[in-house]
Length: 289
Image (cartoon, rainbow, N blue to C red; front, side, top):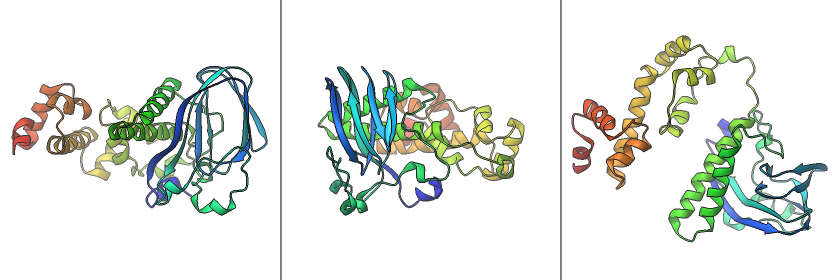
């Protein structure tokens, strides 16, 4: 089963079910089987996890991801701080009926319809229990932001928590995807471009970076890109940024400077010049219309 094909029908919509900054003394959490995902960050101390019969010892600064259906127990040997979250990654219409299983609860057949799909059931993923982040600081920042925001009672904080969970999901999948075989046979497959560029609009995206992801040389990538999208990469990306800026101008109260930043422009002046060149009016005038 391919992840890309699957999420066309079951979109990625993180739903945080339970989350906290757990501060505990030595403890033992008896064996249970999960319906949802459990992600844990070892902020302080050491944690032993036995997952599906295999033992892992996690140290400070490390992360683990326990997937649905995993039979596991947890043991801490001293004081520790372990921010965690029970959550769904994939949308489920009955998600509010699901729950974090209790200590000792391994018989969950009656709730099988609520179980989340396992990431490792997708042919292009191989995610270990002990995660191997390319940028640990990114995982840490997103994890702490997700937990902190989820604990706040206001709706905007819940949205912020969901956004952080989505970014964390993206980082995990990106870091643990299996290398693609026979890439040369698929050099014209650039279906990932729209979603990738949209997700990274606020960042600097270079031709070299995109070409590397496509397993092409920069010159070959430019030619394939123009053939596929009808425009050179820089123009395509500029159009995405300007289209997103138009949505923000009409649908939000963000300032011109904020919109420029969110859409990846150097500053408000750069944004205004590019916008006026394409639309014939300034962003402020466009918002006024």
